[in-house]
Image 1 (cartoon, rainbow, N blue to C red):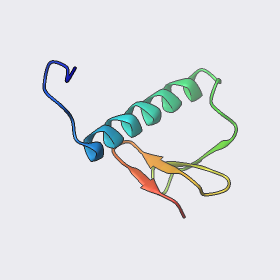
Image 2: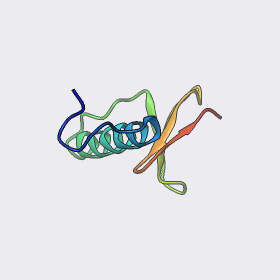
Image 3: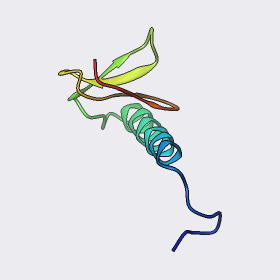
Amino acid sequence: MDGWFGKRSEPELRRLRAEVLYDLEVELRKIGWGDPALVYYEEHDLFSFGTGVLRFRGGMPTGSC
């Protein structure tokens, strides 16, 4: 099943997933439920695990450090 708008490409799916993760983490932090394993870098507007394995911002995953 391709959904209503057809099959999405892998880059588009990664972008959409990153947007959802970013928005969810921002909203959870507003109410004090943010994941302490994620570090927010305000100057770059991105989240990262302390190990640098995965970084993401509001539009795209940025890969590893």
